Structure formats: structure tokens, C-alpha cells
Amino acid sequence: MSILEASVSTNAIAVAQALSISVAKDKGGVGGSLVAQGTAEVFRYRGGKEFTVAVLDGDATTHTTMSRLGERDARGDFLEQQSIAGGVVGFDLTDRDQAGTVIDIAELQVPLIVMDTPAGGLARFATLTENLNGRDVVQAHQSQGRKVAIFVPITPMLASVGNVRAAMDCFGDDVQYVVVRNLYGCDSSSFTLWDERDFRDAWGRVVSGSSKERLLAAGGRIIDLPALNAGVVAKMDALGLSAVASRAHERFSLSQRIAITNWLRAWARELDKVGDLLGLTGSLAEGW
Image (cartoon, rainbow, N blue to C red; front, top):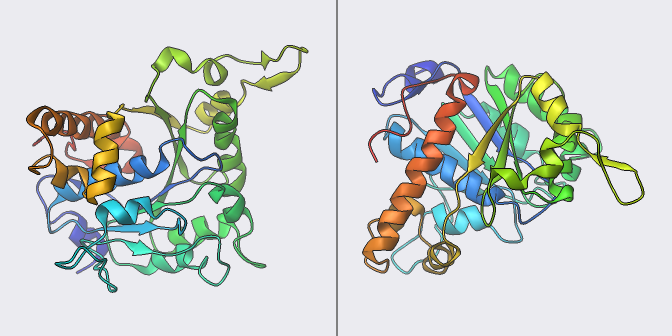
């Protein structure tokens, strides 16, 4: 079965072209792992068994995505061999001997690849090895017939807004960029450093304002990561559960289960907003 045949074998969703999504950032604490996790879960849930979503976690320090989505045995230990369809492939992006994984995965015959990367990941992509960089990653995936999308999560803080320009410098112009504003503890009006052109510091120096303009000029898009209660996220981490599993788990109260379902639906709606950019047909927000 070809990639395209696999992608259209479900009635719920499909992608016109095999797709690779990388969540990339330098600044940590911007919600990158939650973006990767939520994206993988929404596509897996809506796509069903016929729509394979390969998930990779390149953050060997925390392995947050692995802890929530990785396959475990009866004792709760991670399976050494994770399945492509239901587990998470873990590797260390900062290890030059493992960094080539981000290129090698392009040969996977699956409709969707979602990859989480660590803080400082953009700097690592710039020099994966002595001979490889971020643009080689893009070209490798495109050579395998895959569309490449880079999700860049940001908060209102200046350092995270700089992730956008760094990502575009790293991966080049021939990809789809989606900036994800993390709304935890804020709302859309909080992103002054992102929205205001030529924002100046107390000494009159321009410190931000061009990243958004550059993104939009390149055809990039902006969506929002809905806030999910920090206590709920902490509980998911402690229990080692995905959001989809948590919304039906007895350790969560009814109100928490409803909140998790609402969060998944809200994130699915945001992904639907860039469905045309991703080549998606069908709605991710239905069926929750």
C-alpha cells in the first residue's frame, strides 16, 4: 500500500500528501511538547487505525512526549520496541550519532510524522552533524514525497518570539510555517512583542516586530494553543497518561475529564484552521 493509499483509507480525515510536522524551538517552556502531543493525539484519534501517525521524541532530557504517549508493559515500563502506529520513537537530537534520525525517518511509509524536539533544538538543527543541517532535513523529507510543516510555539516573551525568525533561517522558505501562540496564563492581547512592529526597548533599540511580518510574507499562519489547567497536565505527567486516555480515566474527576475533552476539541479546531496548509481533508474537531 502506498503512502497516499494509506492516507485516504479512512473516511474521517486524510492528507493529500504525506506530511512531516516538526515542533521546533530554542526557548524552552513554550509548550512545545504539549503541541506535539496534542497534534499526534488528535490525528491518531480522528484518523483511526488506518491513518498511521509516527511520533518521535528527540528530547532525551525530559522525554515528555514519550512519557505521555509511549507504549508500556503491564508494570508501566516503556516497551523497548515501540510500534510506529501506537508508540513513540525516542532519540537524542543533541547526540551527533543519533541526530541523523530526523532524516532517516523520512523513509517511513506513513501519512503523518510528528516530531517533538528539545529546548535549543533550532541550534541543533543548524548543525546536526559536520555535514548536515536543517535544510538537509527538509530536502530529505521532500525527496520522499513528503510535505514539511514547522510548528513554532511562542509565548509573549521576547526570547520565544525570536524562535520564529530562527526557525525560518534554519529551515528555509520551502516549508509551511505555523506559529502557535501558547495561551497558558495569557490571551491573544498579551502578544505585544509579536504583534507590534518595531517594538523598542527603553534605550530606543528595536528588539522585535519583524518576525510576524516575515512569517506572513512567507505564507505562514498563526493559531492558538488553548490553555489546559496546570494541575491536570501535572496529573497526566505523574500518571503517565495521554490526554485521550486521561479523559476516560478514573483518577480524573468528571470535571477534569470534561475539561480534557474540551481542550482536545479546541486544539483540533485550531488545527482545522490550517488544514488547507497541511493538505488535510475532513475535520479533526468532529467526533469528540
